[in-house]
Amino acid sequence: MKIIKYELRNAKYKSVIICLFLLIPFNAFLIMSAASAAKWGGVDESVVEKYATEHGRKARNPLINTDQGDLLLFLFLLAGTAGGFVAGYYWRQLTEKKKATKVVQDSSK
Image 1 (cartoon, rainbow, N blue to C red):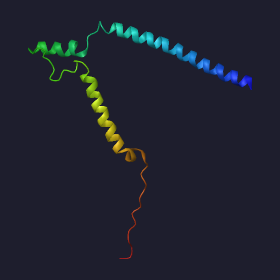
Image 2 (cartoon, one colour):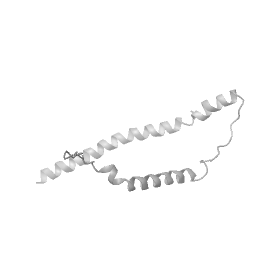
Image 3 (cartoon, rainbow, N blue to C red):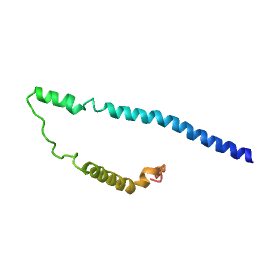
Image 4 (cartoon, rainbow, N blue to C red):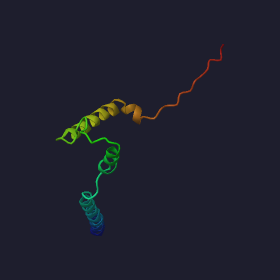
């Protein structure tokens, strides 16, 4: 009995160690990509603004500026709430299997 418990515990530690060895390079990749993101501009700066200035239009502020505070977070919250209500309302139709119905014709005519 002690041998089995030891093997299970040893297997658990092996899986934790494997996860750590997989997470460390992944985190390093994320840090390096975040550091290099400062060098590369987004599509708006590199493409859209370039063509806009070529055609004589200048950049303007967006109609709804989501960069201010938590407005973007609030909009995602509203969209998630609406999606949750819709999915909850139609939950049975989304998850239950449809029963096959047979159409029986009346042959007494």
